[in-house]
Amino acid sequence: HFGAQILNAIEYLGTKGLIHCDLNPSNVMLTNEGRVKIIDFGMTIFIGRSHSIAKDANLGVVAPEVHDGPLKTRADIWSWGFLMFLMVSGGEQPCKPEDKHCNNIMWPLIKHRPEFVNMIRMALTRPVAKRTTAALLKHLRLFRGIIDWNTIASQSIPLHGESPDVAARIQIHLNAPLTLLGKDRIEAFEARA
Image (cartoon, rainbow, N blue to C red; front, side, top):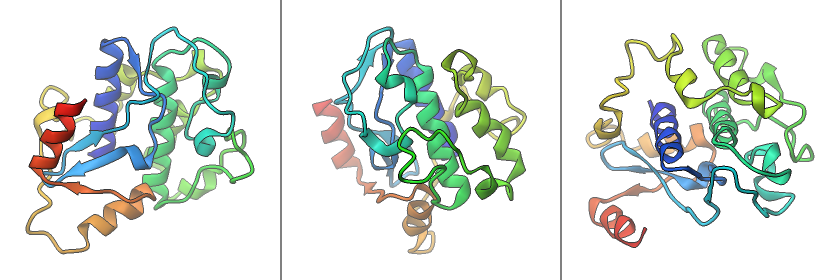
């Protein structure tokens, strides 16, 4: 469900002509209600623009084409695929640290979850023209009957009343610290954005 919320946010940004360009585990937060919030829009650009991002930025999370020229929303789809790989593998990186642009994805790490492999492959495809889109991903069988795309932005996954390790379990899936934000902190963040 968290991956679907992130995908929905990517699609929404695209409708506004924007690419986040820095979707990584530390920029995905959860509210107490279980809603995903994407933060840190400091690297966001308009579709079709180039980005002057550091060559070693975010070790594979950033799409390879970010370094090469004008971007499309599919750059954020790459990052979404990277995040999904982290969630499905239990926090394992899809490529070795020295493989800064993720040229050699370690598919065996997620072979135990075959229902996700094809979806993640579609997101981590090169060249960018062959990479999938958010709209195509939303129609995959994996999401049918589980995700209501019309109401996903307002859906909650209650985290209150669950065992105290729920945040730790989510953290393991994203391999980064997630903050369970209170409503007042979210409203303050949204007011600044």
